Length: 418
Image (cartoon, rainbow, N blue to C red):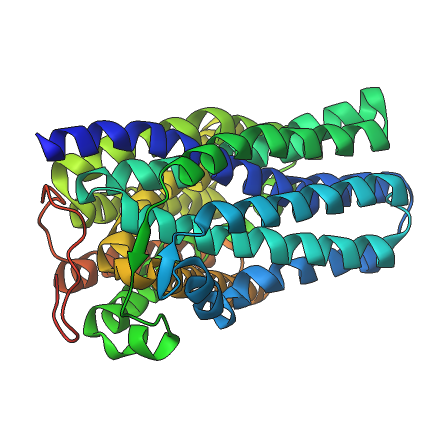
């Protein structure tokens, strides 16, 4: 009966977590997709617009301050402070966006500085939110928690990129950015209210740290899995948009492909993956996603070499960048939750995410070099082979059992494998 009550309570928690994840991705969509288009429309040079890429640094390096945030969130004695951290970080993000609204897109350096602060605040919120999800969600709901995370990322990116640009065109820069700031408030309030209401006073003997994370064999194995899966699954996708440009598609058409993919295919695939992970386990879904990605990339390589219709290329581009991506990363992140110690979930989960970000950056650089010097067909063919080769590696490294344990996350002893 206690477990039934706990899992019923998971669903409002999943929804409130989804609100925070959508809000974070709204910020990302505005920063990395919407703002560059606005700046270019204002006549700013590409080299200055390229400086916006620096804003990804807080997300890639957030593992450095994750232990301090976890120690603040989970004090030795007292109530869980997740709601406080999310509230303060969220308000800082809102204040930053309002500041950017009045600075204007042409003031690139002040805008960049403010957005860097917003990224730091949002990354800190992410640490607290992920840690709260790891310690609070029942293991059976890990897939749904990560469906909220991945699906929220697709939905937020579509809002922050597509809808934001529409608002800029119709209502102007200031009101559009202020509207995005107001949306952050609405999306974050349900989690803050719920987390504040659920606080209880506890005594905690464990002190979160990076050293404690890296001492555990499942963490080291998880970091290896993250590197293998990320490079195999999305290493070549950095070249997907340039490939579509070279295929003759306009920027508007490519934007529509990504927008439709995020809003429909990616979001639906994330929800489907949440159910599939609970039924079949993370490993099976990760392997299925890798198999689908390998087939999709092989078809793109076939087209790049011999030529297929544009409609087929578009369909497989959406499937690759949104469908299989959402399916695979819900499963991967659910496994990250399973490997994370609930006593320091924000540290452990952040380490996995940082590995994802760092490998993605390196893979994107390598993919660009390969596409430039070898061409698209060899790039997609090699990427398809990597995805196929990763399937047995995942079988070897990841447990195949569904996360059906009705208890909350057990705290594994150092060196054990769940």
